[in-house]
Length: 629
Image 1: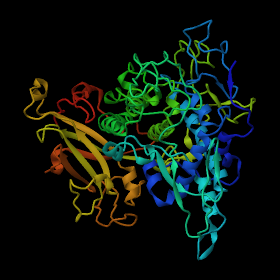
Image 2 (image 1 turned 90 degrees about the vertical axis):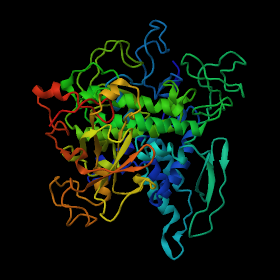
Image 3 (image 1 turned 180 degrees about the vertical axis):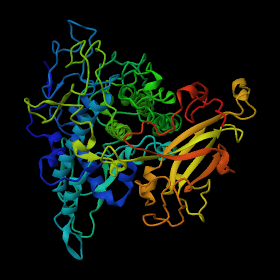
Image 4 (image 1 turned 120 degrees about the vertical axis):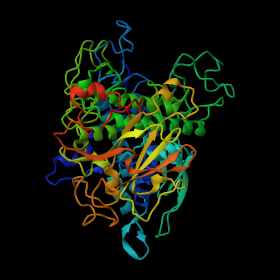
């Protein structure tokens, strides 16, 4: 049996729970969005360590259990056991006795999809954190400020290493929709601070100049570990010698046919949307990401929050569920459906991240899945009682699960041992890591919502006239915008801290020849936006009720009106970029907050009226005629 990984008695997963055994409560580490992580000065030291540490993990020998090669390979190829977590079959994949049986550990199309990937991301995060702690000691022990003896430069980096978490990439943000990937994920090199001691990563040695200044640490451009990962071993199967489907066939490289995953030779990097020279086309990646963010990820994410049962939320096999298990307009999506689109958009045709067997080798895989984990955590905050039940028997099983097994919250999430390298250690179950706080970390939106009974606020717009402006338009929603400030089309609205988000109305113009569209001239749609983040940004108390006074103590801006509903304002832009007139009575809108005993943020439609109401569409999907008032 081929086994990957040198034995190790260290426990990266255990490190995340180190504070649990202490009598003193430990603060949770906060995973930060990558754009903020890369641009905000307060994360500068963490960013330096992250770039250095991710590169160090990628440079570890292939037989090191904490190497990027080993961790990435858990998701598929090279299909070998990890951390000596053995399987049920012959030890060869596919099993020659049962060639149709699935191999690998990965859980897709299963209600374990969300919880299996949670310790997976944590495994890499803690490998990076371990390297960051080591690298922090290489910084100079000289004052960070020439006028003060403490803290030293090393002190600052040691503290940053303690706080460091894997950043997430919010693929559904307005910034992603407008610009695509951030530079830190695409640039071949990235500027980071120098250390006083050389950092040796496998065959490459980065020798930094000794730092003599006490005011700052000089910066150098460092090979960017988020751009690509260079394979230390062949990945996949070599095509026929000289075949144009092999990366060395430049400038005539072609992507393999029939969805077969591409071969990546030793010494070649991962790519995204490759051209004939096997080079990443950054512009093509960004165009793809922008399109997906606007038409799929953002609207589907809003619909996803309305699904109120774990099974249909968790995976992409749940399309046949009954309406009473959730809302009718949320059923076309799941967290796995949205996740699948991100893989496709990032890799395109030929990019490793587009192919499940080799997707884990693209370094951005883990930033993407950190955001998937964040969305799962946000959904759990909205639906605290929703949890998995016994599944139907599986057909083929996995490397560690026999055929016919039922999956539930006590199923072991292999190969993720609670103590890495300890053969006596059990693997996590979904119950063990149901809440991210149990693993020692959280997300910015959840810092106010560490208890399941906390509130979550939304603004709901209903009865929006779809054909009001002869074509598509976008309603930009603001909260507490000062009365003397008018947002203009020439300035990106998402840069305003009062900005809540957009609701896009996808409509045809009057010249359309689509008979169905012309027939539905009076169609009205609905949409929903989370306002929790904006409330925090403008200094509002997220625990107040919609009717509470928000103009007094606790409000950052005295211009905010008397209650949350009155504090909502709109800017409407058509597809030509022109601002359009908008009246507050053009649609109905309200603020909704969900408590533990609230099953839906949208007012419940009585069963006797459901058929009549079902023709009221959603802003992110098909829209039909509205229910008359």
